[in-house]
Length: 100
Image 1: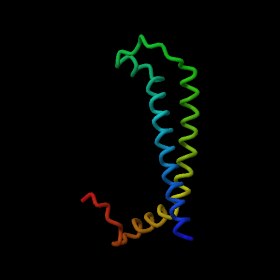
Image 2: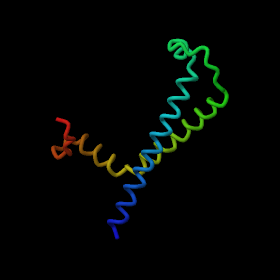
Image 3: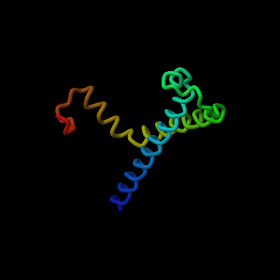
């Protein structure tokens, strides 16, 4: 039974992380097009965009991103607390990242 619960939580975490990535991309792209200096630098001044609509999309995706980050932190709170304690106490049994 616990294996099923653990697997479901992994799927939930994965879905939250994917949604966070999508919200970030939407917010980034709409923010890029709202930033007129960048539009001039890339020579896109002749492009007519619905700025009011993009501003709404940007605002809502930013709000969604903030909520998803809060959910992400809540779902991973045990790992965050454990790692923080290990790092602050100078524990030698930190997990290897495999990037050495």
